[in-house]
Image (cartoon, rainbow, N blue to C red; front, side, top):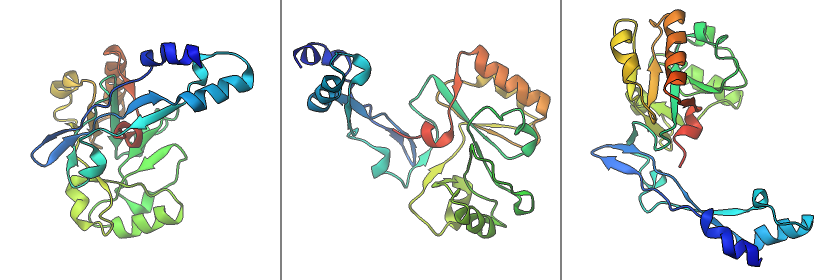
Amino acid sequence: MQTIKEVEDNYNTEPIDAKIEGNTIIPGKKGTVVNERESYLKMNEFGVFNENFFVFDYIKPDISLSDFKDKIIIGSSKREYVSIIIDDWKYSDYLSDFDYSYLVKDSNNLKIISNVTYINGSIENYKSINNYLKSKKKLSNIVLAENANIHENKDKYIISPSLDLYHSNYYSSVSKIEGGMIIYVHDSVTLSEFKILMDTIKYKKLKLMELTEFITE
């Protein structure tokens, strides 16, 4: 316990407030504080001090996304990551090793993949898609801003991409990618262009993060 008290300040982190501008928001981060008692009990069970056994409590930011779910999320405070949304299955084989979010547009071609987060359907077919995803326990609590007004469940996180990639603007836009962005890859982007996108993310020393985790404080 004495050692825990001596070093715990090195592991505590301050919360970061969400940034709000108009009707948009960039989620912040929860802070962490070492739970001395639970950390001690866990280490005592193994009879050794080990920093990997620290148990943390989380501190909610003063300005938190959970209090402003009516705002539109346009990015993340996780600056070492980006998150992508795709609406074309032609990328799915290439992305098979990643968790990623998928915008469901066509209920006729809908298929369930274990590591995909489905966010919502198009305006024309969202009810049938949502009912299907709900039955498969794959319906998420994320919706695109353009479709937010048609969803019956208001307890959702509303997002708007930081960057929309089309075939027509691809080469002028892909270089603008930076950490904290939500990138929406529209179906006009070719597979070759998509691979360049992934290489660009890697070249900029960024990592992919699934959207649900990306917007979580």
